[in-house]
Length: 89
Image 1 (cartoon, rainbow, N blue to C red):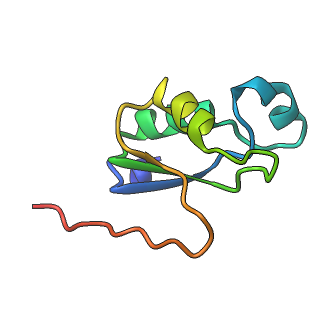
Image 2 (cartoon, rainbow, N blue to C red; image 1 turned 180 degrees about the vertical axis):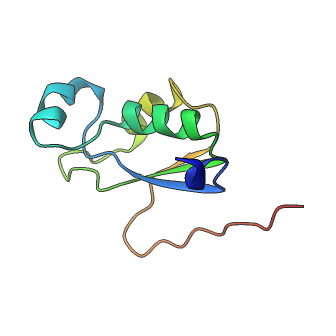
């Protein structure tokens, strides 16, 4: 998708971590690693993982799973968090 190339911010579903990849496929959700792959393929600047399952109390695994595929910043915001997107120079 040309429109998403080089996005400043990619917001992507990451319901499951990589240990639950079969379950993610079964329920048509993405893993954090798949979100990282998408961010890398699109050359996004920052990846934001949303819609994480409430079974995960620590976002650390999601972040590390995404960083296996994407080397930019990875954020997992809490509800109502605000993310500032800076203007490009």
